Length: 474
Ligand code: NAD
Image (cartoon, rainbow, N blue to C red):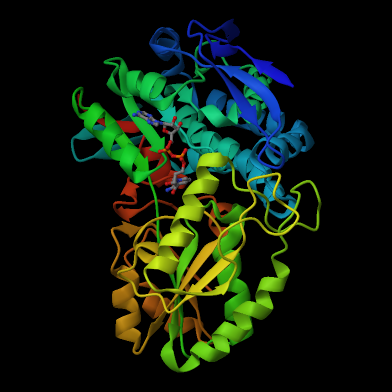
């Protein structure tokens, strides 16, 4: 049992001013594995003061120094990678096949950003002016629990590369994972006040950060509902915002796709990270005349998705992250049945023998219409909805008929045809017959259209979100 009662402010671990204490509960067996003291508005303000002081010198630090800090952050995380993986399994329920990707990816974003720094034209002559790129100021980084470390690193790298100082407000339910990350940040030896981390509730610490007049920028990853509140708060002092929000991504299986390959790909896209992934392909669009074949292929592929103890290497799916998430997923499964969808696999309740934790049954619905709740709303669990289509145009229309526009997925026997369809999908990224390499590519942007968000992360696109231009005529 670990107790976390400190924030990281001005280069030191400091006692919390806020006094609310919450339990951290293992999703695998519901035992209490830790306690965290949550900060309050005063903790948030102290962190902003420290970041504001540090900005004076950090904002004019050399690009060489910033590149060095990025390298050191990468090295510090990798030096403790096995601990990160163990805590991710304990606190979040992450399974081996996703943990390594997540932790190595978290470290790698710093190296990728180091490369991006070299490509960025921080000074450029445009006509009679010299255009300089300047850090916008103190950035508040607000992150969710579903990939706790990755989400923080993913924002930290561009903010620090740009010369911004930051206050991180991670999810209150990831305190053990974040504590280890903060120890790594501390070990990397950045100047005091450049990175500050405050544990706390969104409607307390998060709210204060999004309203604070000395915060120039908010980068938020989380639900669309909270993202809208963040944007409203930020408007009062005209902060810049980057919002990485929810998704309900379509996976189009074209009529030339191999059924077994498409089914395996579809389940990977839908069930990755225990089904708690913003980019998950949760609507599977299948040609009507190939439905029977795809159903059989999905059932066959589902044998690869064993649910079990996340510490066991053979488990492909761990538990959902917490009780609220478990109840939410159960509610959507019930709603799907009530609205007339048919269960091909899974359903309500726990898989047999896994009643002790927040384990859900991997679930596939067929006979789903795109106007059903399970096809409209983000479920954030291992639940896939199969929707039939007749023509390619209809498939594109269904894929785009969503308030979200985060990601698209395509299975096809003809990548050229797949690429042509990809260009018609209203989403920030589309994967044709492939998974995951998005985060391996240093310069490729990620982000959403429509209510999936504003702005982009990664590469020069992500770095630009923390920079403003200053044109100097001299
Ligand atoms: P959430 O919106 O509930 O919380 C996200 C963060 O915002 C947390 O740190 C929370 O404490 C904070 N917060 C809550 N209320 C706030 C307020 N009023 N002001 C400021 N901050 C506040 O999301 P979650 O449940 O932690 O995460 C799941 C959601 O995140 C899903 O919708 C998922 O799609 C989304 N997500 C998106 C991406 C992406 O890149 N687009 C990536 C991962 C997760």
